[in-house]
Image 1: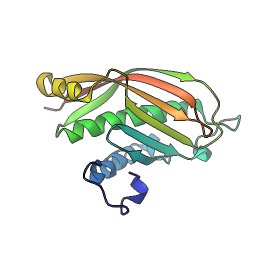
Image 2: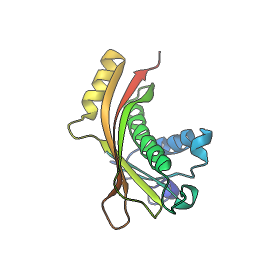
Image 3: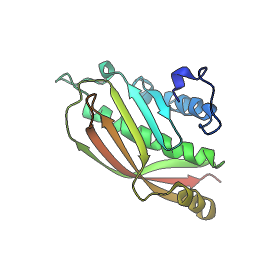
Length: 166
């Protein structure tokens, strides 16, 4: 589902809540450093969150995407993914990145399109159950910035922590 096309087509019953994406976009826009990135939510299927930003806002001295912008986009996509899962579970929690690692594989001479999903072996139901029972939980997330011809420009792995608000 794209935030830019919330009016069409209508949500299928299995698709995530459109209002949650609107709230996520508003949250991104409320942070001044993020607002200037001109990012948009390109899609969310309940398992993967995709973000998009124009290269023109993130170009470096070589004419390709600035590494810091790629790192920020992947951090935000992973944070948003975890936040959406917490909200969908009906919980109110702060979400933090605990640690991350980034590999820059190839220069990106196109718009920034990133996608985040749970890391292999990570389980959303276990994460949510732990958050409910212990008040805090962590989950591994991976993200990629895609090259237009396929493959990844960057790879990101991270652990995110959620802590229930009291």
